[in-house]
Image (cartoon, rainbow, N blue to C red; front, side, top):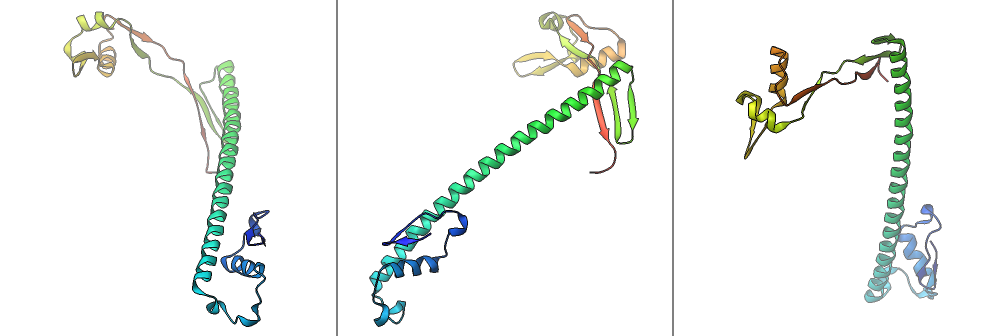
Length: 190
């Protein structure tokens, strides 16, 4: 930053930002005062000195504003970069896991242990779906219902337990088979 006729110009880059003392010295040098009769800062009239301090404060506030702008831009740029990298990396992971899943499916393999980890297809429990809630509620025993203030709704855990225990599927309920879920587990630490 340079001072010309008492006006500071913006720094060209962050390394051009000067300290308070350097700013003040530049300002003093720009005044074209005959300093031969001045021995130190204390000999300058108090109000003039305070006015100069205000000028330096103004310059520092401007500098702080520029630094905040630089930081905000840097944070935004870094965040955008990270989001792009996360997307690229997650897409690569998704593609690789789909390739491993397809291999297991085509070879009809449940799990496979490899030097870097284990891959496999984990069987998922059947999902319970209430297809006709009013029909189910009208014939369901109270232990298959869960009280929600002002209403009753099917208790899926209780229904699942009943089906598992008796094998009987209540009216208005369907069991839906779910596709096996692919998993992988890496060996060792990173």
